Every structure is written in C-alpha cells, then in structure tokens.
Image (cartoon, rainbow over all chains, first blue to last red; front, side):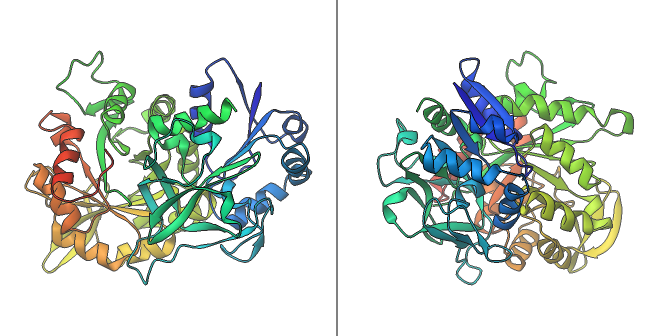
Length: 208
Length: 251
C-alpha cells in the first residue's frame, strides 16, 4: 500500500513526513510528491497545510491538474484522504483569511477567525488542548476522549452540517477540531506533533 | 481547555549538548537526540534547542542535530541561536524544526520577521527578546546579551507582533542564571501589551517560579534549563506542582 503526502510547497512538512515514516516503518510506503500522476494512483493521501488559507489554496492551484486529481480521488473514487491543519480547512467552501478564497468544497462550511473576545484569548491558539470526541471515527480508534493534541492556528472550520464533526475543542468557545465524512478525514490539530497519541491517529489512518 | 506549556531548553554547541541533562545514566551526555527524547518521553510539551556555536564554519552542525532529533521526537521542536535570514529559517524548517526563534536579526531588520512569517506562517516564527532593566523601562539586547540596542522592550514586543511573530520568547537578562525567579513585571507588561502567546525565560530556580511566571507573569508557556538539567526537578514533578496550584497542564 502507498500513502502519499502531497508536497505542494506550502509550509514545512518535514514533521509530517517524519511521523508517517516512523509509524509506517517498512510496512507501508510513504511517498512525498507533487507529481499528479503519482498522486492519482496512490491508495491514501495526506494533505498537510501551513500558512494562510489563501496561500495554501493558491499553492494547490499552481500545480497543474492537482485540484482535479484530488477531487477525483476523494469525490469519485472515494479513497481516504487526511487533511491536517490548513489541509483540513481547505475542505470548506470558502475561507476568509487574507481575502475571501474559494476552498475545495468537500465539506460544506466556512473558515473564519477564532473570536478572541476582544483580546481575552491570545491568538494563535498554540499548545496542547483536549479534544472531545463527538462521534465514532475510524481515525480515533483507541483514542481516549479528552486526549491532548497539539494545536497552532488562528482560524477555525465551521461546517454547516454538524454531522461531519468528529471532535471539538474549547478555546474562547467550542470549535471543530476534527471532521469525518465518509472517506474524508481532517484534524485541525497536528497529530504529527502530538506525541504518542498523535502517532496512534496516524497509525489508524494508515491502517484504514 | 488550553494547557500551559513547560519547555526545557538545551544549549547546543558544534552539534553537541553543552548544557543539558547531567543526572541520569546517559549513554552519551552530548547527544542532543538522546536528551530531547528523555524530555519528550518525560512529558515536556515542547523542546527548545539554543545553538551557541560561535564559529561560522561549524554552524551547519545544528542542521544535522535538528534532522536527527525530529526523526525521533514527536513534540514541537523550536530552534534558535544564530538565525540570520529567511534562508536560515527555511533550512531549519526543512530539517524538521517546527518553529524557529529569531533574536538579533529581528532587532537589526524586522523585515526578516515580516518576510518569514509571510512565507512560512506565523505559527513557526518565534521572536526571542533579551531584555534588561534600565531605570523604569527595559531595553532590548542583542548578540547573546552583549550589545544594548537601546530599544524599548515593550514597544519592540508590539512591533514584533505586528510584523508577524507567532510567539514571543522573553528572557530577562537581569534574572538569567540567577535562579531567583522570572522578572514578573517584565513578563506581565509584555503579555498585556500583545495578543500573541508569551514564553517566559530567565531566572527559574524552583517550581514556585514556574507558577509565578504563569499566574503573575501571564505567560502561556515557561521555559527552563538548569532546574531540569541538574535533576532538581523532573518535568513530571513540575507539572504535578503546577496542577496542584490550579494551573492547567497536560498530564
């Protein structure tokens, strides 16, 4: 089986690569590429993302055929994809970081700035926070409710359909930190930086 | 609820740990990977490497250290010391650092902060501020505390936030190495001035100092070196103590 991490030149993906390789050892092949033909034929995709919503969408679109390839993989072939951080945020219809930007539209909703309640809460939301599991999710197999995960973000995904939410966390207010819709998985937190619990989530995704 | 973080800091020189753990049976006390792993296994919320390599020809050693550590350590890794340019930041991130802290270069040219936060995102840009009290204000020092820039630390902190820093690592030069506690006044003044998280550093001698840094200094995270390296306290003990004082920690 091949798991492909999409390298679309948006931020630092070394930690994602290291953690997947650590979990996969030699049992699963972890490929890192922006080559659309390779991505098309893989079994699972990891879509990382750092920086702004707009910069990530722009970077995806700058690689010819990549967005179409991802759409086909996820929407038609229904193969598993895991979005991390802005990778998850891009599932939305629209994002409002920098300027209004169209997302991939896989899970209806929008990405807006976390309400810091007039400076009462510092942004970015950086550090370890607990997640509340709100529905059964394959990637949270053997993950305890209230587990700690590492977050770093200032924007949040607000899905229209609450059924797609698999976990929430509390910072300023309750917000979505993981989604699952059929073959589409996403975490706002960074499993690759969330110690052993995070590696377990990666393992669950690899073993889907 | 977001937890307050405890961050042990290791000094690395020419690719070897020169100020780090020296109380357990380390196979190799100079091995940064082994030291970082001990801390992350022990519950450290992040690891910080401060590169104090003096000569330019050995500067590349930090890249190897970061590369090796990031393959074994799955908590966030911050690397600072000698970071001069966007290119330096790029190299460290590519080697597996999650955040890079910029000190002197940010004072000399805030464009480094503007450009790097735009390019890589604010989440990985930490601005380190070395401040020393002068009368009723604090001044920013550069070059490892050797040069006084004369710049007001509070105004500078705000400027760094506006330039795109994701966090501020504030070290009190007056307290560093004294073990008498953080400069609470400095921490709380900067923390109140900015809306980004502050990491307090310099002066920790006991666990109450950590509590004060968070409760009174309004720090989101506390950085410490000696109290952990010399086995006075473990990260676990520190967390238990903080928790007993009503501070939320990851356990």
